[in-house]
Each structure stands twice: as structure tokens, then as C-alpha cells.
Length: 407
Image (cartoon, rainbow, N blue to C red; front, side, top):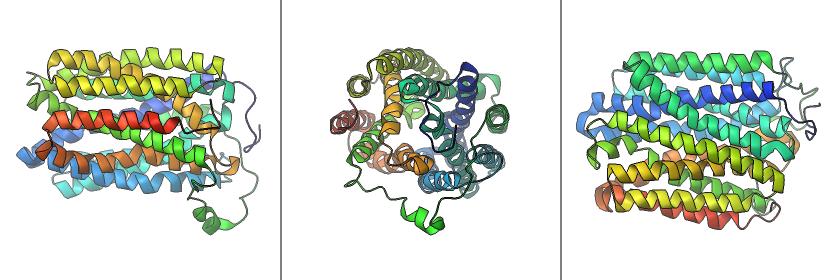
């Protein structure tokens, strides 16, 4: 198929498997540091100020991702390499992310830690921009929720496998970072070397300046894209409120005797139900052609999980909330990715526009720590934080009802 054509031929199992593994490596390298390694390193460097340092490092890194993702997408949209439009950015992003993880190994102060995490965010968001475009580039609309469900499962599984790797298989901080670096490069290389990538015969007219001006997607001209973006932002904001401080929550509020093991158990429950939700919702959504009812269901489930933790900060409550959150997030990711690719403004700007969508993934990583710090200190502690998570998630459901072009 040509680079800009609307895909019609269903993708095969081999291509889908390699895309799944590439995303798995990406999310493992992203979430293992965020869930375990960065909090551990923040505690080693800052002691009682660990929450402040962790929030500052992740916030600055997320700010980098907000800029890099759409820019990398824009550049890949214009790439005429004989290796394809997307593959050079997938592999290059993985290598840059691995370099950042290596910097974190040697980080003996907060500044170096911040620089390393910014490099990780720059590299992994470059890789994310190119991989996200695979859905509208290669997958027909009638298959997108099923493939989107697998992408969502890869995100979850990356979280679980990453936690397993850095808490059970490799317990050292340096070894954990290096393992993440090796796995993301291997996963990216497998996808790049074993799958085709359509070449763009000539650069789009107008030059980089014109392309940069198109980074802004007008809500007036493309209201469905704007409502979908807003829904995606609020879902990820609610998820960030609920997960960024989960390790600290288990230790400080639940008083779990082994917070890292507790986190691993919760992620296992979360992952199992996310897999079920993603597979079932993806198949049903593609069969019916409907997206919004599934997203509304997912918002309700995730909000309920957050309210359980807000009302009852106990280990039993966490064991109930984790599978609810997983089921809701699995349903959401399967169907939301399909919906978002159906409201993209123009085929020549797919990766750039998905980069704008991915800002809704990364911007909450900037906003959430800034809002979470006063909430934890003055507005109810963890109960207030999980209540904020529920409110953001329910508001996301309100916004998706405004999308008119997708059922």
C-alpha cells in the first residue's frame, strides 16, 4: 500500500505480534522506572523529600515529552528515507531512550537524575510517535479496536513485566535501568527489521515552517478531535493521580509490610482484567462499529476503583480496586485508540496529529505532580488524591459524549 492511502487489507498475526512486542518494550522502559526505579532513586537521594524530588523529576521529563512527541511525529510524516517514514524514528528513539537510562545508572544527584529522565522521555516519546501511527497507517477501521486492545494490553503488560524485572529478577538500581535499556532496543529492532514501512516518495509541500504551523489543530474546524483529545487527557490525568504515588500509598497509608511486593500483586490483578477487558471490548466494538458506550462503561469502572481507595485505604480495598481499574482501562484503551484514529484531521499528518493526541498522555505527568503535592499536603491526603482521580475520569465520560462523528 502507499504511505498515505487508507488501509483496507487486514493486518496479519506476525505483524501484530511484532507491533505488540515493540510497544511492550516501550512501556516496560517507561513504567518500570516510573513505578519502581525513580521512586527508589528519589528516596536514596532525598530521603524524606522523596515525593518532592520524584514529582519534580517526572514533571520536567513529562514537559519534555509534551514537546518531543508531536515534533517527532511531524518529522516522521515528512521522512523520505529508503527505510521508510516511521522505522528510523522507532529505532532512533529506542536508542536515545536507552542512552537516558544509562545516564540514570550513574546519577548521583537530582540534576543528573533529571537530565537522564529527560533523555528517556525524549527517546521513548519519539518511539511512541512512530509506533502510534502504525494503527492508522496499516490497520483498517474494522480491525482497529482489536489491535488497539492489544496495544493497551502491551502497555499494561509492560508495567507488570517491568515491575517483575526490577523487583524480582534484577533487584539492583543500576541493573534494573540497564535491563530496561536492553529490552527496549531489542523490541524496537525486531519490529523495524521484520516489518515493512511504506516509503514517502516526496516531502509534502510547504516546508518545515508550514508543517510546524499545522501542529495546532483547531477545535473549531475539528471539534470531534478536540473532544476526543479532552477525554483522553482527563482519563490519563485520573490515571496519573491514581498510580504515580501508588508505591508511597502502599507504604504510608496502607502500611503494607512490603510495598514493592504489594505493588507487584496489584499490577498482576490489574493486568489480568485489563487483558480481558481489552480483548472483549475490542472484538465487540469492531463487530458493532460503536465506540462511545464502551468508553462510558470504562469511565464508570475506573472512577469506582478510585473511590474505593479514597474511602477505604486498606489492602483489601486495593485488592478490589486493582481489577476494577484494569478492566476499565482495558476497555478504554481498546476502544479509545480506534475512536481517536477515526477523528484525525488529515492522512498526511497522521503521526503529527497522533503526537498531539499523545500530549494527552504525557501532559498529565506534568499536571498531576503539581496538583498532587498540595492535595496530599492540604486537601485530604491520599483520599483527596483518589477522589480527584474519580472526578477527572467521570468528566472524561462527559466529554466523549460530545463526539458526533463516531457512534
